[in-house]
Length: 338
Image (cartoon, rainbow, N blue to C red; front, side, top):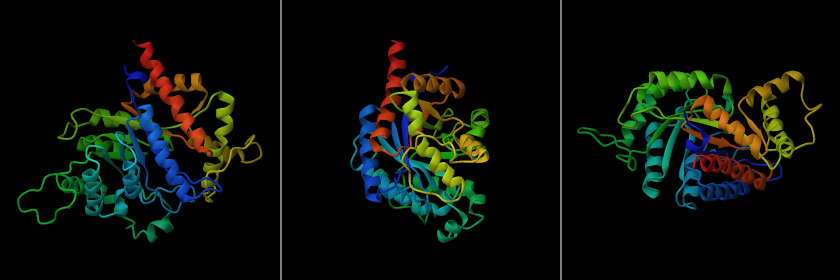
């Protein structure tokens, strides 16, 4: 049985834009957070592709990965994820082949099949409405570009060929779980925004996993929203920034990250509150003791090999403190085993 002490910790960053902040501020904060996570012993730092989102600055994901990688030393950098149907597989192979050549042994390529945006923006991206239907073929094509060239191969990704960048599949349903199992790839489930199918997706991935040249045993990572602070009360207060942002998303008026408020009372209807709480079904919100206990619980329930923590705050200092508390929780578990 895995425990928190046995589980890798990583960071999922959306390079959030706060109310009154700028995109440049967001990028500086992403670099600062990556350095901070590196110093705390986090394993990887992933950025995610979203478009036309006023609160998310990581749209040009591969560019930002390179920027952060150039200002860190050891932490792995990658995408959580690149929405592959938005792109030609060869272009992604070239981008991540370039990153791997610049930062060897530190680059991951996580792939999703959703657009990462709304329908109108998908059309602006020139995304084919049926592109997701071909996702398995797109993944296979991309993996071929990243592998060794074969005799007679006339089209190669340069850079990219023989770079062997590790490919992950990401998902919020059971589709990618089953595809990852069939292809023998590591799998990350997005329980930081779609928790309902977490356990079913993990069950299918593990039960149907086929060993491959990439992976001999299943490896599952789960995205987890964590709002950690120095007390339960403070964490509940700070979580209202995330609640407001998701509420605005439900209302189809996405916004930058707002400051916390004393209470959500009167700010949402009962149906809206239920929608927001459903979104945060696996969220961990609390002070150090609460966070440690809940992290231990989710590792015990899921037997996750890795947790990738998404922590959304209005103040950057609060976000850094949250990651400190999570890292300390794991260290406490390791100390208890010695």
